[in-house]
Length: 284
Image 1 (cartoon, rainbow, N blue to C red):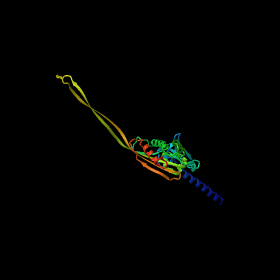
Image 2: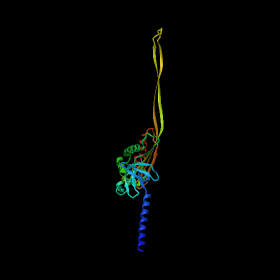
Image 3: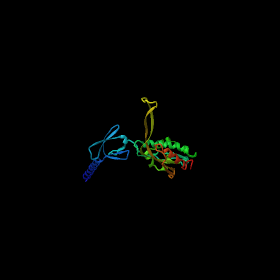
Image 4: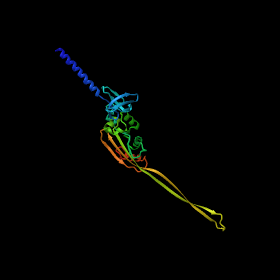
């Protein structure tokens, strides 16, 4: 009887080992990219800058840069992290209290949309942000304190918030994170309307005395000379929208302006007009 029991235990042990080996053989490595994509298969090698990977059910080998990978979860259960894709921190360490935030305003980089491939939307958005800070300081009541654009950018960077994530953070949390009572969100739509040619022409008459004339009367010959000047300029149509939210998440101001002008810097005229007539402006 004891031999039978012992045999059963040995049989069960072998069975469990067999099941475990089968499970292990079907387990796959999981590569999680920074963009959230998950790749299932087998990591065949890991180099200094990249990894080599074979998708499940395929034989072709692929290479992925480590800079594109958040982490690898191996079939064994071990996890190797390459880039910490942490969510923006909104804990009490970065938050501020209502008293400290009172009458403080932060201006975020502008969101720029355009049909002109020669315009760098990100660079232009940062430039408009800086210009908006200076325009704001010249046209708002003295009780308000403007946060410097460099400080705003630094706080956003410390919390892993780039230009593409600005509108994914609720305004209330954004105000607390930046330590201000008001946050200004701006958009600038710049549309290339095409090139326009402008020109002018001037006609002059040049006289020349005829020396072969046999009489005493002086004869003259003349010719007309026409000169033309032309210039070509690209015209743009610009729309500016300013929206201000407070640290309670309420929208306290939102207006749009289509300023007069045809250059890419026409936005400054629209911003100045809107700020002056905002709840913070000198003409409110």
